Every structure is written in structure tokens, then in C-alpha cells.
Image (cartoon, rainbow, N blue to C red; front, top):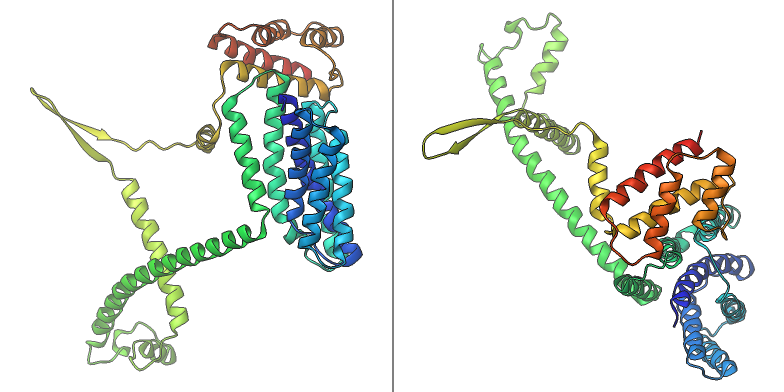
Length: 418
């Protein structure tokens, strides 16, 4: 199967999930029943089988008809009620639509707009349906939305690679594994197993949390009880009379305070736990703050002398640096050429916003149009040359070129957004 077909299959699989969401909405309106997630598996798998047969030069009509017929028979075996008619109509329409659209050209910018608009529109439709049908369709559709978001991101990434002619064998297997996971998770038994496992795991975690809180509350409770007992003994030492301490002039108030220390007063266990828990949190916070301010002395030993150096804790005041490190950790590493292509695509998106970019334009054409409309932008010439060099040459591109195109992009972006 050609590289374009592989990318287009990702595109069609993403759309098929959105078709499933809309088909499920129609099914709820007509027969008040949800469609099975098996339909995602069947529509994608049947389309793939038909395309593989066509690519191997089998009879085109048979390659289309046989997987189609087999899938309808399987669906009939799985669905024995009246909903089979809705399911069959849905499958036929989506299957024929997939085969018709599989060879149509697509672009990254158009695909990005289409997928995001479709997602937002479908969310609005499902929210309205959830209100008027008095049924929680959104909860049932949540799994499909997770599939859609995962495939949408992969499709964007692979379409960008295809447009810039960056083939990566590892990325191919990674994408196939993601699609396989999505197909497997569309099976109801698998999802039931995942739900049960996840619920048990949450119960274990919750039990551990409750156990830790209980342990801390017991420790703190012992300390509180010790303090209260000693305070009571000190107060009652004066002939067992709290009034002699003259803490309060009001006899009623002093009697109430004395009653607090009476062992016969029952303790509200629920309130006691809450108070102990809050006290434990306060204690932990205070201890942490105290230790965080302590300067530790580290000893450096040498043959001739011993040096004591104060180890001052360095506080990162800028939280954005932490977020940046997390993003860098999660980010898939790219080559210098890939970084150049991604940077130039950002420029194309900005040019598209200001109305000067068209999908058919080459980098040189786009440069000429921008220079005509914005009076010879600074940095645009170098940025275009670096991009063309990275795209049409096979030699190694140095890091300096990447730094240069990023600087030029920042300058051009600032000029375009004025």
C-alpha cells in the first residue's frame, strides 16, 4: 500500500469515528438505542481489506463486494433485532463513502480546519441531544471522542510528514500500534475488562490513602491527647477548681470549659477525625516549610584541607520552566530537517490567517506574494532558502540553520501580526 494510501486511511479512520458518533445520535432519535462500537472496527477493517485487494490487482468488483458481503453477514449474526436495518444502512453508506474518497487529495491546513470544526460542531450537537432526548448520549460517546482525538493528532503528524517528504519507518509502526489499540478497545469485552481492572486499582489506591490518613490521624491524635491531658492536669491541680485560675469572670463560661475536660463527655468520632486530619495536614505543611528553609552543610574532603560549603536550595520562581521541561520530556524528538519543516508550517498557518497563502503555492511563490503585500519582509528570504535547502537536498543541515530559521520566523511573525 502506498504511503499516501496509509496517510489517507488514517484520515478516513478519524472521520469514521465522527460518522459513528453522528450515526449513534440518529439511532437514538429513531429507535432509542445506541450503536455498538463494533461498527468502528468493521467499517475500518472492511475498507482496509478492500484496498489491499485492489492494490494487489485483484478483480476490483470482487475486492469491493466480498469484504462488504462478509461484514454484513457478520453483523447479521451479531444483531438479531430490528436495529440491524439501521446498522446495515449505516455500514453501507460509510463503506461506499470511504472507497469513493480514499484517493482524493488532502492538505494539512484543510484537514486541520476540518477536523477541529467537526469536533466542535459534534460536541454542540451531542450536548443539545443530551438535553432534548433526556438521555446521557455524551457519556456513551466519551470513548469514541478519545479515539477521535488520538487519531486526529496522529493524522496531523503523518500528513505533515507526507507533505514534506519525511518518511519514518518507526513512526509507521507506532501509528499502526495506536490504530490497533483503538480497534481493540472498540471491543466491548476488552473495555469491560479495562473498566473492572481500573475500578479495582482505584479501590486499592483509595484504601491506601485512607490507611495513610488514618495512621497520621492516630499519631496526631496521640499528641493532641497528650497535650490536652497535661493541660487538664495543670488546670485541675488547683484543688480541682478551674474557677480559681480567674481565666473567665463568667461562671457559665468557666463551667462549660471545665466540662470540656470531663472524661464522661462523649466524643463525636466523625468530627474528631476531620479535626485530626486538618491538624495533621497543618503539621505536615509546617514541618515541610521548616525543613525547606534549612541550609545543609556539605563537607568537601581533599587531601590537604577540608572545605565546608553551604548548600543553598535554589527555588525556581518561574513555573513556565517546569512546564517547559515536562513538555520537552513528552515531546517526540525530531531531526533538524523536521524542526525546519515544522517551523515553516507555522509560518504558512500565519500567512493563511492574513489571507496570502494558498495550498498550491510553493515556498518561493509564497515569499513573492508576501513581499508584494508587505513590502519586503526582513528574514523571509533567508527562511525560504533554508526551507528549500532542507526539502530538496540530501546533505546534512547544521544546527545553525535551524536557529536561523527560528529567528527569522519570529521576525516575520511579528511583522505579519502588526
